[in-house]
Structure formats: C-alpha cells, structure tokens
Amino acid sequence: MTPAPASSRGARLRACAAGIVALAIAGVAPAPSARSGPSAQSLDELTIPPLAVDTFSLDNGLRVIVSEDHSTPLVAVEMWYHVGSAHEPEGRSGFAHLFEHLFFEDTEALAEGEFKRLVTRAGGVFNGTTDSDRTAYGEVLPSHRVNLALWSHAERMTRLRIDDDDFETQRRVVEEERKLRVENQPYAGSQLTVDTIALRDFAPYRHPVIGSMDDLDAATADDAREFYGRFYTPNNAILTVVGDVTLTQVRALVEEYFGEVASGPEPLSLPAVPTLPRTDGERRRVEEAPLARLPLVWMAYTLPPAVHPDHPALALLSQVLGGGEASRLRKRLVDDEAAAIDVVARIDRRRGPGVFLLGAAPVQGVEASEIEALLDAEVARLLDEGVTAVETAAALNQVLTGAVTQRMTVASKAALLQRYALYHGSPHRVNEELERFRKISPDELLSVARTWLQPENRTVVIAQPLRAADGTR
Image (cartoon, rainbow, N blue to C red; front, side, top):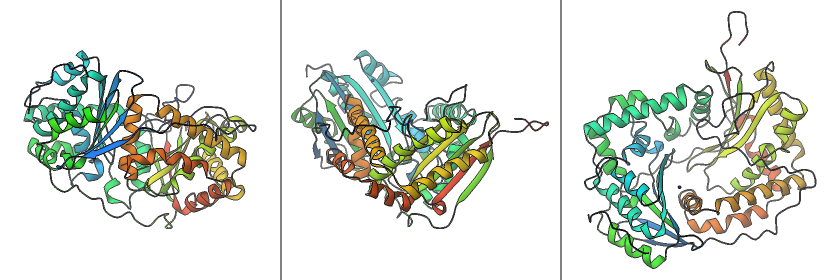
C-alpha cells in the first residue's frame, strides 16, 4: 500500500409539537411538508435532467459508479459494503454497526485519529451509516483531493487494525449510543418492535441494527477480525464517485489503489423472501414506554422487497396519506378531529421485505384506541373510495420535488446512485424511475392499496405510558 497521497490539482416525523420527542427515532423520515390543496397543479411536465452514469469493474469484483458533475469543485466518494445487520452470524448481532465505528480508527498506515485529521485538513467532511442491508462510508472533499478519499478507502479495506483495546473502546461507544438513542428515548423501543414483529418471517431482519449488548459483550477482537475478512472485500462493495472529476481520472486512481487488492469470499446471499402480502392476520403488541408522557400508535403493513414493481405506487399512496399539510391523515386526525399532535406515513424499503408505516401521537386526553380507530378508518376509506386525480397529481408533485432535492448536491447524488445499485440492481435505473411514477393512475393506486393495505397484512404496536397510582399518566 502506498503512503497517503499528497495534494494533486486534479459534508422522522417532524419534531412533534408541545415537546413530544420526534418520531424520527430509528430512521423515521418526515414526509415533505409542501401544501397541496384541491387545485394542485401537476409538475408532470417538469424536466429533470438525467444523471450522468458510467460504470466499470475491476478483476477483483469491485464495482465502480462515476457521475461527472462539474458545476462545483467538489467530489463525493461513497463506499457501500453489502453487509448490514441482516448478514450477521448468529450470536453476533450489532457487528455491522460496530464496524461503522471501527472503520474510522487506525490502520497500518493511519494512526488513531489520522484519517479524520487528513480529511478535515483537506477541507472535507466524512460520515458512516449502517442499516439492515449495507454499511456506508462517505466523504465530500475539494475535487483535487479525490485521491485522498480513494486511498483511504483502499487502506481501510485492506489494512484495518483491530486490537483488543480498539475493540473494547468501540464496544463501549456502541453501548452508550444504544442508551442515548434507544433506551433513553420514549418511543424508540416501539419502533424497533414494529420491525421485529412485522418482519419476523424473514429471519435476517428479526434483530435491530444496533444489535444486542449481550452479543457484543460476548464477542472478542478475533471475532471482529473474522467478520472484517469475510465482508470487507472488493467483491462485496460498490464505490461511487460523483463530482468534478472525469471517468478517465477515476479509473486510473481506482486501478492504482484497488487493482491489487485480493478478492474475498463469495458475497453472502440472503434467504428467499416469504410469500407476500401476509394472510395470517393482524399482529399486535402493546408495550410500556416508561419515558413517554403520551401514547404513540404505529400501524405497519408488510411490503415486498424494494425491487418489486408496486413500490412507486406505494410511494404515492404514502404521500396521499401522510405527505404534507393537506394529506388525508393530517386533515382528519390533526385538523378536523384535533385528536393528534402529528402524523407520519413513510415506506421502509429494503432488499428483503419492508414496511408501509403509519403513525400518530395523540393530544393530551385522547386514548390510543381512538387514534388507532381513526387511522384504520382512513385506510378503509382509501380502499373503498380510491384516490382522486387531484390527489394523485399532488403526490406526484411531492415525488418530483424530492427527486430534484436528491440531485442538488454531490453527496445526495452519490447516495442516490448507491441505493439504485443496491436495491434495483443498476444505478442506471435512477434515470428510468421517474417515468414510471408519471404513468401511475388513480386506478393503479387503488389496486395496489387493495393488495397491500389489508388488515391481515397489518402490524399494530402501541407505546403506552405508565399510569400513576391515581390512573393518570
């Protein structure tokens, strides 16, 4: 491995009102808040320029996506390893997330903290995230330092140091993160419960990304080194470079830094997804939320993998129900009934089964059962009456607005291309999907809703505050 390169020429719901903790615990993203009234005018004719997409692969299996964008002198570099919580061995839950932390530590050529110093001194920022399907690492830098980002990824792919002290330090960091983001948040546990119940038929998704502290406490640095060798390999990764670079430049640098890296074991395949939608009946859980002051109701419908052709229509249905100030749930629960502080509707897309999630936090004095009944009534009305042409146009407007937003920065474009490569099998699909959205009719929305938003395919989880001795919460 060459030394670090020198500089060449060539950074979930909205927070509920009245102090309610955001429903965004564990990744619940808010729907766009744009108002879309009855006279909403479709943006159907809006022209969104296609992204430039070039791809190539190395002999060792590393796949590379390049998108040239010379509008600003910046570059985003993202490496996604196709290992998430779904790939963890039995008894080793939380390892993918643990590696998100270990990957920023020392290597054979980088002392502890040196990677962070190099990136920040170059004027860049970095980040890492983990979910059930992948672990992602990315940087945004001035484009003439793209070599630094690529070299550091190659260095960490091949020469990460995992000693007992590093492993123990990061294990404790993860433990504190779990306390902060799960155990000390009023509704985080209920969100994790939704996933584990709704997706329990798919074994890889039965445990949360953050894992079990019992599993991590039982693990050793040797276990971590074995995990690293199994999953952190070029043939289990996709590298994306977006910004003020050229395909020729990136190809030369990638071949220089990664060309001699040995391929690893065959990537681990996930088991077949069970037949969906479920027909075994509603699943239900009421659990105590000791830190909460108000109940929270989740209603989730199990969905097929992200590659399924119904997903664009499901995305529009999510917008109709909960996307913005004029959505059905907000109008009914918040505006008309004054029963809820806020509502959320979103889709969790995965390589395996996902969920169509609805949620609402009631105002003081409204019981969770009332909120559940209102959510159920709005879904039933959707299945009975369908969606109007005006609502369909408004939902499409929000999707197109989101598509523009996702194309505004090199970082968001790099992540977008990675998602299409991971979930759809090709980054080129990014330039095809919007046309699919434009062709969706109200009749198709009704058909898709009647397929997936059925009671027998539903999971209901209610987070219930503890009652005081006098019956109050």
